[in-house]
Structure formats: C-alpha cells, structure tokens
Image (tube, rainbow, N blue to C red; front, side, top):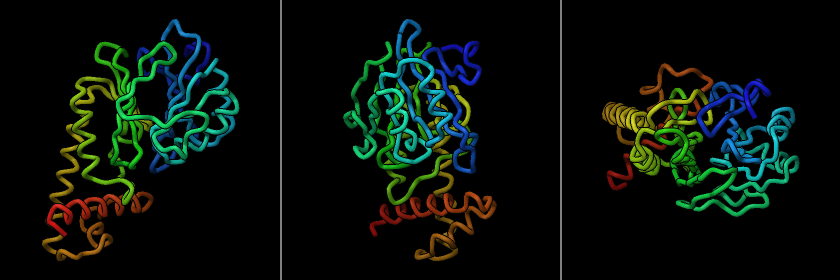
Length: 264
C-alpha cells in the first residue's frame, strides 16, 4: 500500500495514509479523509471513517488489501454512510461509540486500547461536535504520535457544534483533553494534516472564547432573550449562505452555554 502503487492513496504520517472521498462541500471541505492505518510489517489495515456511500471510493478502500477493522469517529453520514457497504466488501467489523453505527463489532469504550494492523490505537471520547464524537490516538506514530480527530478539529476553519446533540461545555473539555496530549500530529477528517495538536487545540479554544465574548456583547445590545437568528445576524454577519445553518447551530450552542452558566 504505497503511493507508487496506488496514486490515490496519500501518505499522512508514518503509520497512516488516506484516500480523499469525492464529497466536497461547504461542511466537508475537500471531502472526507478516509484513513488507512497499518504498520509497515502488517498484512492488514484499519480503515477510519469510510465516508459516503460512494461505490468507487469504497472499492478503492477494499482493494488496498485485507481490512481487519473499520472505525468511525462520529455519526454524521459523510463518515458513516459507506460503513455497511465496506463491511460487505471486506468482512471487517465496524465499531463506533454509538451502537447504531456498529455492524458486527462492539461499541467503542472511552480509554480502551485497540491493537490492530500492528498498531496501538487509543480511543478518546471527545464529545462536543456531536455527543458520540471520538478521536483515535496513535502514540507510536512518529516522534510525537498522531491523533485522528474526526470533526473535533479540522484541517482548516473551525468545527460546527451540532446543537443540541453537540454542546459547547463538552467541546471545551474535549479541547482540554486533546491539548494535554502535546505535540502530536493532527489527522483531521476534513482538510490537511496539521502539526502540534497542543497548539491547534489552544487556538480552537481561543477562537471559541472570542466568539463567546462577541455573543455576550450582542446580548447586551439585543437583550438577554434575543433569538438565535438575531444573534447570528450580529456575530456571523459575514458568513456565506451555504454555512448559515452551521453558524446558527453554533450560536444556539453558545447561547445554551452562557444561559446555563448564568443559572437559567
């Protein structure tokens, strides 16, 4: 499984490669990065986030060689829609935090270590984007390890909180957890690989706190009971129409966080 033998497969770290799914869009950026994890000496691989139900994409993943396990970072269709078909093509079980997205495998457990394809994969519960979001830490992947972050951290831009399933308080705690890992490489489900998980998580938190400050200011002008749409108009006035819904969900999550902290 090398780029020379398969030009669609791109190297992302010492232990990972990925195939970009053909599902670009405002929320998925260039498309979903379907990661393939395998040690050099292993005769099998682990696929993370099969992506959309695109037959060509799923067959490319299946044709790489024996797949022994399929993992998903969270429930959204651009990560899970192809899971059942990839299981049919490979026979590999699918595991996710949400039992509804498990097919032939057990639900993922926070803190468990999976040993597959010659690699240790540590499961980290990182709710916030969704309640079932997880990240996968590969501590032996290069000098500082790597973390497959799903949509918890993206390769560019910021993460949408899928309120009410996703919650800002959970998300900030997840960023704290990821920052504590240190200088690991960031392998996001959308966008390019990034260095230093610690620095990226800190920057993400700073962005969220800046937005919270802007929303507090908007509430001072508009009134405590201002609607989500009114606050979004004030704080996200410059966003493209294609991501307006995502902006409103983020506002709703932030309003819920602020009003909850204020006691009602």
